[in-house]
Length: 353
Image 1 (cartoon, helix red, strand yellow):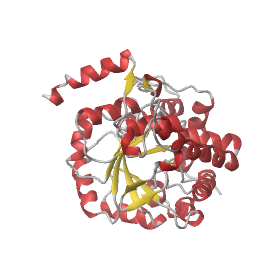
Image 2 (cartoon, helix red, strand yellow):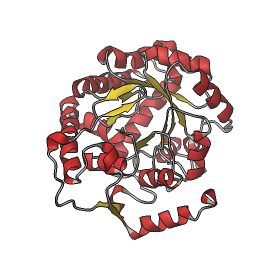
Image 3 (tube, one colour):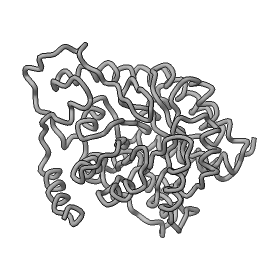
Image 4 (cartoon, one colour):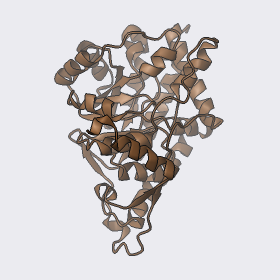
């Protein structure tokens, strides 16, 4: 079957993204997870069996505080990957988000590359995905397409500006307010890998979303991906742009954000999940790292990796003397000098005056 240019772009994104992870050739602007150190708790006075790592959010009970983040769909190849990811999600009892469904709204024959997620994970929590400019009619269609339990509306100015065929106008707030008010499912506002500042989080709060996914710049960098796709000398180079996941989480803490935060961007271990929860995340999600494992080593290896995280989380909570994810936020930690400098500057920001 001959595929459209947009479907081919999905395959390019997949190939370039996986290669970045394979080569560990991605940049991490700002603070990383290594900039946060846990303090030992010598006397936790608890058992591993006392821990509860579950999360209640979106009127749903998640047994685990992490899920498989949006990656792909929209071509024959990416449809197969969505099928495999959904099988993994079902086997490990995880939620899963699909990639942007806009292509399936334009080319209905490609809807099957997203519907396969519900077919393989019939009872799971699935998250639909569209760009912030899509009207409520498209939101309803995307939700119906996979019988979604929630939807991510992604904001991706940096990616669009680097993309040769990308948008050049960004008037999203009124549309997002309408979508949030009328959506049949909870709406998550999600960055795609450039992080969120205090100002951005404050603006999103005014929309009253179900959650904010800060999408930090620790993982897959779509500015690099789009620049490699373009192969043009005049392409914008903003490889170092953005706030990391850690910096975005701390920005939300400084401004005393009260909305549920999802931490995405460079999550590569159970330790990263713990640090994200410690810094105020309600849920954590991983995309590129899991995709690399799937592509390189197969479904069974990804299942084994996820089960390893699930086994480690209760023990890591015990190590820190925390019986729940919420208690992690109360645990002491040390910040590197560079991260402490970031915190000092952010607290002095006009946003906090």
